[in-house]
Image 1 (cartoon, rainbow, N blue to C red):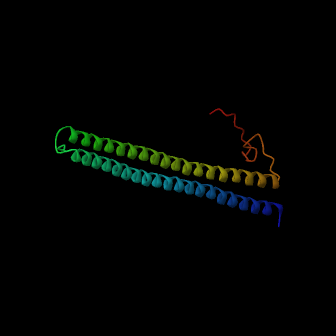
Image 2: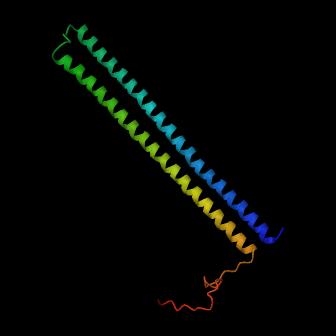
Image 3: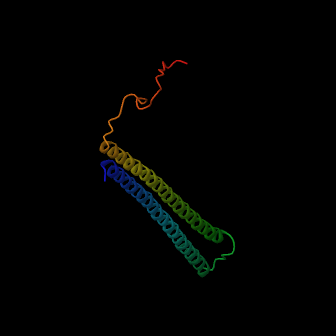
Length: 167
């Protein structure tokens, strides 16, 4: 096998290897995005559980208030006792909304980080592939004895015509 053929084969193998490595970087970015998305789903599930817990707590508190007022002989269907229980229930609803908002915000941030991770994986994959191509091409050119030229047209036959660059 000639050195040029061997250099060409090595270049091809190097390019395929860099392509595979680049694809691995892209896949790693996708897996990281999946992990962030999973974390976002868990965050929303936890927020839902916290909301239910908060609602149960406030519901129990309203029940205790109603029981205490009724045991004292106070009419709980109108007036100040009813307003107190309504205010307690309102605070519970407000807290549930705050829990939901915080959970949604955190989950959206996790999903955003996942998109960034996937984008980063794509860019790293492209960079790996291009870097591998460059190394393979440089190796091929070195193995075949290419030295380069400062005149890009020195390899072309102009048929004796000389161009001054002016039209």
